[in-house]
Amino acid sequence: MTMSEAVPCPSCQRLVAAGADRCVFCGAPMNVSAPGKKTTGKVFPKGLSPEEKAALCKKTLPNLTENMLALFAQNYDDPIQIPNVQTKFLGRLQRGVDPSLIDLTPYGADNQGVSRFHARITFEKGYFKIEDLVSTNGTWLNAERLAPGKLYDLHCTDTILLSNLPLVVCYHEGVLSKTIEFDVKRIPSLVTVRLQILTPYFLETALSKYLAAIVEIYHVCQLSSGKQIEDAYIHSIRCAELAPIMHIQMDAVGEAVELIRKWVMPWRRSHANQPMPKAWSADSRLQPELAKLAQELLQEAAPEVSEEALNPFVERIAVPVFILATSELELT
Image 1 (tube, rainbow, N blue to C red):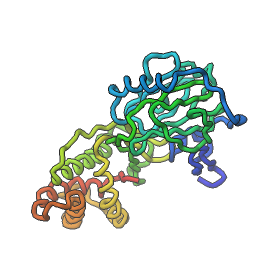
Image 2 (spheres, helix red, strand yellow):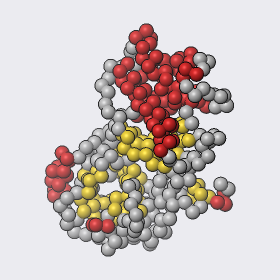
Image 3 (cartoon, rainbow, N blue to C red):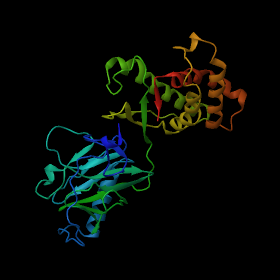
Image 4 (spheres, helix red, strand yellow):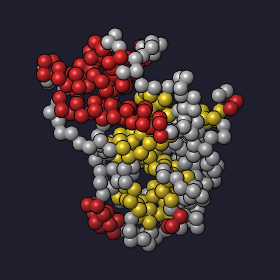
């Protein structure tokens, strides 16, 4: 991609191929409308009083999990419940189905001037944030107009105004999510020509084994340090349109992913030009080196456990470390 073929993303400002529908870095839509004339103030539609909003959220919060967001549209008794939020867009659909978009058409989005991709909601370190995506008619938070592309903190009982559509925010503030979102890149090779295409064969032979290795490292780290093991669920797997990258959202494995980044990824980079065996038993050349790597990883996960006590866990974790170190996939 040459500089003449790239355009800046309206949200993160990084260069993306001209003609792309979404930014491959942040996921924001590229074909957003230009901002209209910015007003200095806005008269909010008559809504709930602070006391009424507090009562509404108090009633709703027991039904919400840790990173679940509820939005109340005006004149609707039931909330819009958005589970497992990492990144979601607020707007309206014209055609098709987009799982990343919360379609507000049933709540009058068309008549209230809401853009197709009006704003983005993200969840980070226990708090939700909102960002206006250069919407045509603007976004307000508690009567303050938002500058496009800038993140603003959301708090329980806040009121968002998407053009003329008011939404009341309810969620458990400050609760850290166990859900992690990470990117996995497919490395070019003779057998990975169509890098961005998922096939059943690829899912079975590459991606499934890669994610299973991450989960096994998570399990062993928890066992070696005496911690409770929780189920590791996959929430979503999304593919970037113009890059061989998969955006993966999972529960529980966050610490394991960070340990893999710290210990396994540097080893991969230092051995990038060396031929790799296809199986752990196929070549004993790398076994001592990778066993040492597995031991160092576990010692960081369970620093209070003696080296001798960790030996059985090192044997169990060696093969998953080998899979992650030699796979055609890698964490970005």
